[in-house]
Image (cartoon, rainbow, N blue to C red; front, side, top):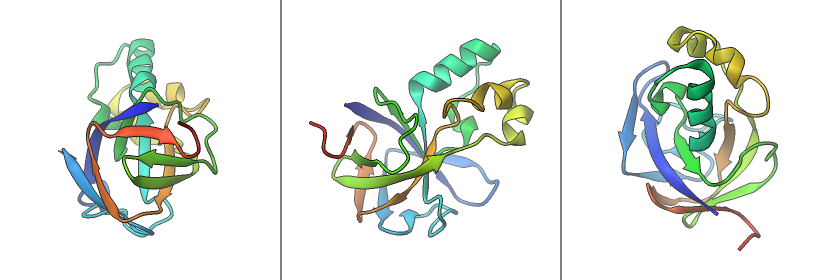
Length: 146
C-alpha cells in the first residue's frame, strides 16, 4: 500500500505543471482541467522513490514536477504494471503502459533522459475508470490487494 504524494495539473501542452491539493477526475477523460483530457494518456504517474534515486544517480536536485507527470505516489512500485488497476482513494486508474522519457528530461538535467529510460523509471500512464476526487494523502493500492 502506498500514498498519493502530489498532484499536478498541466493547463496547456508544454505548459507549466500546477500543484494542487485535490483534483476531480472524470472517467474516460482524466484530471479535470488538464490539457491531456480524453487522450490515451489521461494521467501519468511517477514514484517518489524512483525520482529520488534518479536525482542521486545524476547529481540533480530537480523538483519532481520537472518530470511533468500528473501524480506522484510512494510505497508502491509501478514497474511492469501494464493492465493492472490502481486504486487512488475510491477512484481507479488502469495502467496502460510505461511513460518513456523525452528530450525535455535531458534539457532539464544532463543524463536524466538516459537514467530514466530502463525499468519503468519514467513512470506509467493510464486511463481514469471512475468519476471522483483524489486528494494528496489518499491511500494507493492495487485493486484486489488488501
